[in-house]
Image (cartoon, rainbow, N blue to C red; front, side, top):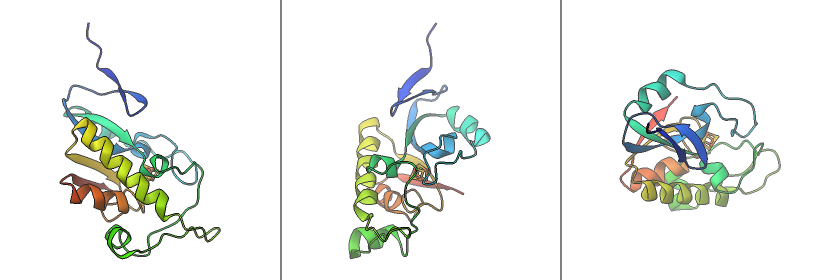
Length: 152
Ligand code: SF4
């Protein structure tokens, strides 16, 4: 019997029957990687639908960029495009630290993972300075031809 459990991005998931790899924000899978460390709601219906078609490759750009959980809770005061093109900085509201490099590095590593696994689509959590379609990672993925689907 062939198992459909595969090691995806460091996590072992049942990847379903699909064959096309897609990126998905780790927190959408119910894993507590968000800035405050609380348990997110797992999106069961979405995950069930996606795993019928795709191999889900979980990514948390902020952790990939070197940020721990829990971490600071910054929001974008603009867009990811402005961060990448115009030098807009991302500042942690708790301590005034400039955390731009973590977000930019996380976006770059996420793009590398997409290239390695051959993903052309990403389901990313909306409202995040990294994962939103207008976030730093969302923007970098879009620029590299990856369709970003915003999950509210
Ligand atoms: Fe979720 Fe993305 Fe934030 Fe990580 S960076 S906690 S995957 S929204």
